[in-house]
Length: 454
Image (cartoon, rainbow, N blue to C red; front, top):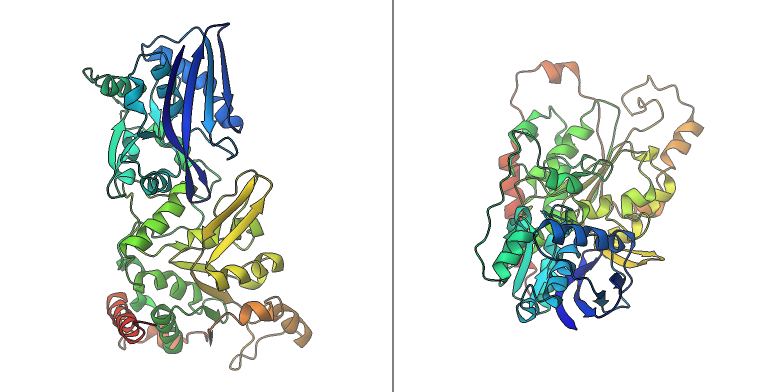
């Protein structure tokens, strides 16, 4: 008879629950039973763990093996429990001292050859472990910088199960060679899976705060719209830009994140946790310290905007834009149901998604920028008489944005078409992104001092 236990973390949204992984060996016919509300990917860990243990040079116990995930009432999903399951099995088989495992949290997926692969949500998982009082965490080597963002936690990054066994058994640690010959690291493939939002308008997340490729000085004219963008950034006001095509609405929205102040430490951890769960952390930059920018296409569904999907809900565009900018270009072309679903996150600063698999809560405190043409042809304005749309068509087009949604927009600006003389003129351009960002930061500092204690 052998028994061992270690810990891992189950994620529900961006919040984590520490799970105790227990392994029990009894005499009898060799079998492997996994209990504790595992999902399909976690149930398959039985085969992954067995192959990884054998290919790492350890002996698989030929007894009746039961692995329990406690608390059993919490649904568990994903492959991040593989490392903890393997360690507990080896502890029950006395390949590792069970006393060493008791106070360690382990997070990672195992390949059949014993390599440790990263999983999504490392940062929120380590945050949950730290809040529960654990001080030692084992994660994949490539995810160690992300886990090290949590203060007060000792992080051990391992490349293979063989290395983990050597460390815990106080044996010489073997070297694991990694010869990619210029190819992408296959260990990171699961974090950048196509179709999960890795390239859905997430521009400039890892860029410097003042992106010279998107300078506000590039916008010709539009003094009122430029002022509105600056006011929106300073006061966190939602903005609606209405004007004909080519007037500069998208250019203004793309330059708004660069004038927002850098995120503080607490805000950076919030944003990084959401993007870690979504698998959108920029390579080589574990901490996001600049305002994110998300610009979904107008064909996006309600689930894509607010979050959802089959099984455990995933964060949507409103959460990926947390502490940053959500830009909805061609807003009237979005589904009315999708747009009206934004009303509750705009008020509450978070979104709660209820599914049969559970209820998750994602942060969603973002700055919303809407852009729209004034009519179907886009030429309707007070100065342009080329519009041929009937008044009924104009009213129907503008009515696609509901009153309750527009009531939550503080600034509404008409962006007129830039004239040829303005485009060809050699006059002075507007202020640069750096100058406007300095004014925005000063305005926020004054507001914070004025409202201190309230």
